[in-house]
Image 1 (cartoon, rainbow, N blue to C red):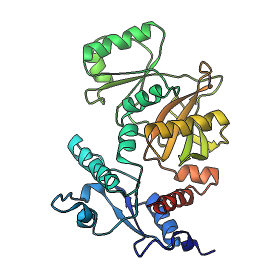
Image 2 (cartoon, rainbow, N blue to C red):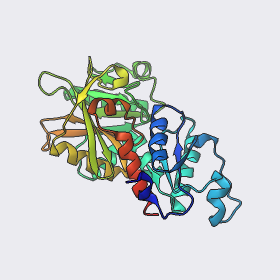
Image 3 (cartoon, rainbow, N blue to C red):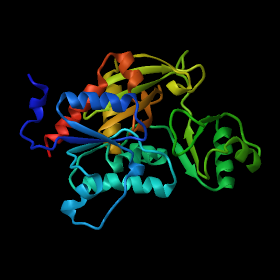
Image 4 (cartoon, rainbow, N blue to C red):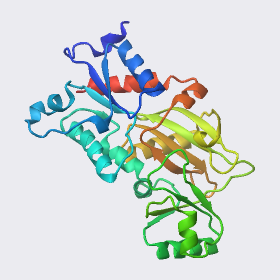
Length: 314
């Protein structure tokens, strides 16, 4: 059957915007797959777009995007100041308000990029996730860290906004004073996001990346690092994983709770939990090249088919 048949009868405009801060393997894969379905694509950096609110609701999309997208996919958002990021996310909010499907939505990305918010949402949905604390006051942060260490707990300090395991620090001993706190944790930008450390279960240290599209787990992998950090960007070694039902349920529920439709969910074993696992993070702008290579699943094609399903509902 002609692949374009799935979106026939939708008028002349079959346009998808891919928002990305770089052109690379992921954007090329998406464009190639979409073109096979007869869909036109345009790659735009959110930072390059202007917002003109000098027009009617009916003309807003055309005035701002010079095309009428049926759907938008967020592959990347360039870093910047709080004001810059807020404006870029506002564009996603505007599109959703106007009825243009956005994958993932601005709200979902906001929830997932903020690790503290992710932790809160997961806990409010009774999804097992490590205890965490977020503070700004240095004295309070120092006191809390040392009290938790005294109770025998190990801690992980992370940037509240961050990825790929960058500046993630394990705390196993008490910190002497505020000066040592500042020197050891000079990456926090004034916010101390403290997460309970979930140690190795048995004789190996590992975690899992489970990839969700829509309401389905489509691929997964096990990651093992030389130390306690397992991110591929930090030297983690990966292998294909067939996730069990508990892992699938956690990944799908976490994705839905945070407000995402495409997500990479990081899960770790924890025998103390009833489910046997805890959710560490939910990534709303996940990469999938390594996972696609390892799993043998054409993740790009699956994402594109999901995009087409959203287009057909407009």
